[in-house]
Length: 590
Image 1 (cartoon, rainbow, N blue to C red):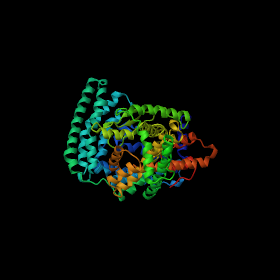
Image 2 (cartoon, rainbow, N blue to C red):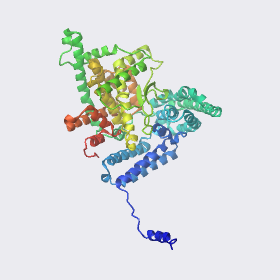
Image 3 (cartoon, helix red, strand yellow):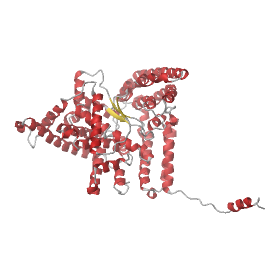
Image 4 (spheres, rainbow, N blue to C red):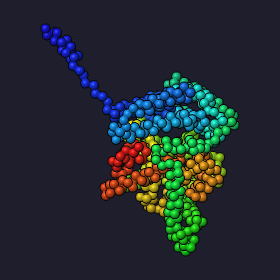
């Protein structure tokens, strides 16, 4: 009888209903977010490496029409599943992430089907192919032999990728400036092989080294074949218009900024700031001038004419331009500047400094021609890996006059400002905080407006807090750099929507915002190659300043800079309006 009791017990248990717990809306969203994080990197294996997802390190992107169909289906399915959720029933944190993911998916779908850069932007492909190898070699996320074998895997697949690129780009839609830039960047992959891969091949077995060397030779031939196509086929037939027009610019601006500010709102704010900042610069410049020569008051009255304002500011800036690095000394001075800015932030206890490694490098060749410097942080899935503060070298073919113009722009004080923006306490510090956010999705979907706005905010913060012992010329340079951000937002829409020509753009940059000719000429090229990104600096800064003002008012005597900065950076990098709601416990905005 005892042997039958377990069977009887099982039979009885089968009759007892087992409760089924339905998922809450937040649990459903968490599941969807987790699936997005798991599945979306597969859409771009090269991009996945950059994010820190190394499941696809042996693969390259598929840019065929079939791949675009799969990508479109992924976005549509994900949006459909999100639409079934009751957003208001989600937790506060998930309400923010719901909006971020929805906006990201809508933007991705719009870029795929409406903007269609895949058909007309060859620069995106030179950065893709260069990034395929650079992403594997730049950081030590795995043993070198394993990474080198993945390099071989990708190099063997590059000929097919180049073939797809040539079959995808439509020459008559490609703007000439994009074709010209792609011609300059394409061979950058070979420099990566020469400088980053070849020196490491001795760490492989003989068989693996032989395979890698053969793959490098195959890839080099593919690069040269593609170079000939770019020069002989694409560039001569590139007939596209780099100006994307209001019909594309306005929705792209909304997707890029994640802000409620419209194009006219941004223009109005920027033009107001242009006048206000020039007036502040004049006040500082006038003080510098009178201190040097008290008898010059007649040339610098309290209420100047436009001509007097221009002359006095330009004269004071000349004093800063007199202190410049050697032609090959920018990187060395940037290293010194990083030590100084880090010490200042630490001594003033402005914000928590993460322990992540940071290295200043010459910009890789495949990335040159768009910006003078950038911060290359590890992806949100590669927390703690090395960050690179990359500075572009002066082109070898520039004349002495062009070199002089560039070094005047990047004088010692300007390099300090650049270091503040890109590294400390700018992008390096902010992204290191963001990557540590427990909200993985939010770190993945970072807002360029938050990131670039923080960089500009950092410049003004350091100046206002007295970096370089409240040197008035440092303050003047910091304001000049802010004017660059103001001009960026005007240029962005004026060029792509209003048809601003090069002459008027150069006047805005050189005369109105005191940029040197080389800086302005490079920015003109950048403004043609990109759209809406140049607006992120000014809009982001405006929103960060508004957020700080609100925090100071809400917290009153409990406000400290460190509490504010650590709090602001703790939420990842979402649009600033969401940080405001989370930081100050306000309603989540729509």
